[in-house]
Image (cartoon, rainbow, N blue to C red; front, side, top):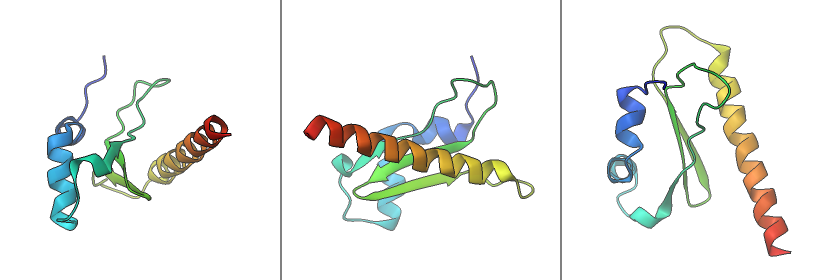
Amino acid sequence: MVKDSVFTMIFRDKKYLIQLYRALHPEATEDALTDITIRNMLTNGIYNDLGFRAGDKILFLAEQQPSWTMNIIIRALMYLAQDFWRAGKRRLCLS
């Protein structure tokens, strides 16, 4: 089993995630947040990131990296692709 970082371990708990989000948006309710973090399925690497949906916004938080890396851009694109897939799936269920 791959070990998560402290960052992802703490904020996977919705209680702490809502505290983090309320620091920026005090009016937010717990129901407003949905965890959409992409889990590692094909690799053993640790992605120290967290994704969540707040209303119509997608928030992607990543731990600071010591140097610029293309992996962060690829990971952000993976979140975008996942959101498009989910939106398409919801649209099919509604029609």
